[in-house]
Length: 465
Picture 1: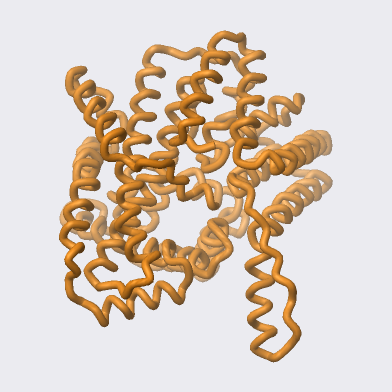
Picture 2: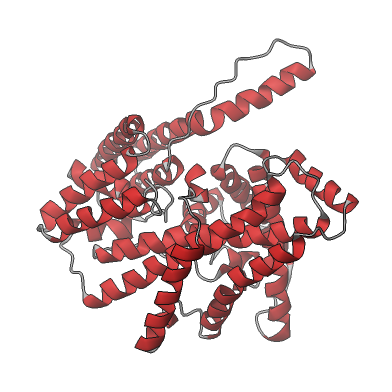
């Protein structure tokens, strides 16, 4: 079910009314049933996969706690959880990719080909798999107690606002809020509504309109012109940001209406002054997960500069592979791993003044170059676009029109985010505008969503991951 679909606009008011009319125990049952309906609306058959994974990790979590945090017996059970979860993820997400690549290798040597099995990737599998693994690991580390009731753990995994595209929730943040009674204040309703509106504005008005520019280059059979290739690269950088952060804003706002605070997933990433700062601001729930459950266990920065560089590269390449079974994602991860490793070798990174300004500009272009590869259907198509652009380096008749559209879509948001950044990355600043300004801006955004937004529900980009 899509947040930007008509069925969700009917589903959520019904669920929310039932939620507010019941006591805490009943609220959790309402949320669990609603979450399964929300997920099963896409394809009910994959509910069994999520429920099966939930039961296995709930039982393993209890077993790890019984054997004692940090013990060898508990560690073996953690590896069982990791093997099962990554095994399921590997079958659905990567089996087709690896058999295809092996097929190409066999063909190069004239050997018999293998049957290539293509499976449908269950929506949200990567997100709830990582969340489930972290739960068992946190019990092993002694950072969280195991949940005694299967219903509570099932809700932790399936909670619908963040289920299919994050943010990936941490056990210490979400579980206490699920098992304790909750209070919804007027301030939470107001700030939640603000987040929901900003999320829909970024997704339906900005991201889905930018998709027209992006698709006209990346998905067009016509030869690409260099100005349009460059514009499409910038447009996709903002499209994926507005699409993904828009989803996260809606998820945070809906959850806040439930009295539950989700972790922040974006913090003005295009004002980052380097790759390290970027990953403190972009997809924060994934970057912190990779740090805590992959980079640090590999040794982090404790084993010398060479090993640190390797750990950074391995973490980011695997982070790229998490996004999907495609060489473009692997190379995107390598690109970011390289950026992080290079920054660590620079003795004094600019943190203020003119040096910081140029570092921000350079980081944005570093990010945009990576997203150009990320968006391309294949490495070959990315190279084709560059070659076509260099061969056709003049403006097309549509270039200026698309450029004006890009500025009109991105410009106002960039100004607002710049003002937030100037105020110490204060994301709540719009909520302190005078009431008449907030009402006027809200009315304008609602008007733009309905009048100039996409006329059908575009899937969120991160649903495919």
